[in-house]
Length: 355
Ligand code: NAD
Image 1 (cartoon, rainbow, N blue to C red):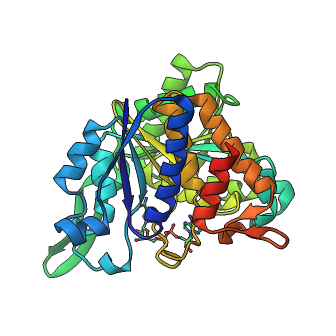
Image 2 (image 1 turned 120 degrees about the vertical axis):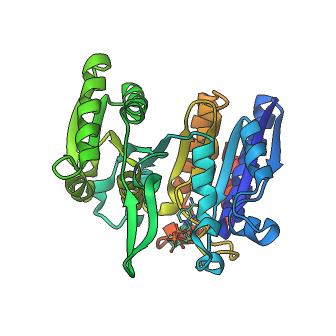
């Protein structure tokens, strides 16, 4: 028996997660394996119910489950709360407590969606890259951090810090992934300016030389990388980068593929794993059946591949999503002339039927 902690969160998080659960229930029937789902609250809804974004019960249950499926958290209702009470603290708390140091974000261009990208079709057709983002270090976690006051003058402070072991383990994750793909890693840093990046580059070179002579390694400064992603995205196979650079570059990569509603992610570490779409809670479209559930459904497919070791079934789910898109079905974010508009739920039903 396999136990999944389901944390739908806020806004469209609840809408897309129910479609991902639909697909996992179908997977359970196909595999003839029992999968139990435990519903948990985190983010804004947990603040409203329990007064905090990450209640102890949510965290302890998530720690005891075999995997976590997350929707998205946040929304304008909670934007003005103090820092420790903001819904996004639930994400940082889960990542740190579950030791999810590697965030794996594939960006794949489905042929049917080349017209939905904001770039020219010949630039985006065939994009197939993965961003491997370090998730528990860097400027989001470094101390000191806060708004400090000295002599009546306030100063916002964040600290970017990386240790050798932190860099080593994420480098191994990226290179192992590259070995199963096109054997090319681009490590993105800012080693011309930042000390953390100088150490990053030194350690990435060392790990690569000692362990992965069959994988090509390039280095790129983050400002250049953000430009190259738009200029020639197909030059990338695996992008390895630190927390904040990865946050920004993976959103940029997502738009190449047509919509942020298409991008899944897996966050892995030692013992635990969490799967979630790359997008947020999209308050502007929440509650109207407009959300694209594909990112969440493909996150469920990644759960099947990485945590339940069902690579073949994961591939079938990916192919089912592709088939539905090829047949011309679209949610609002990727709709173009001549395609058939579906709601979030109808899209989930179509993909379930196509598996
Ligand atoms: P967002 O990703 O929620 O939305 C950005 C834009 O993309 C919006 O126009 C939205 O309508 C659209 N969009 C996003 N997902 C979509 C989908 N599945 N289908 C169709 N369109 C989609 O980012 P934001 O607006 O910057 O943030 C909104 C809230 O979400 C904030 O509170 C933010 O902190 C939070 N957030 C949470 C996470 C997370 O839980 N992992 C990630 C990012 C942002």
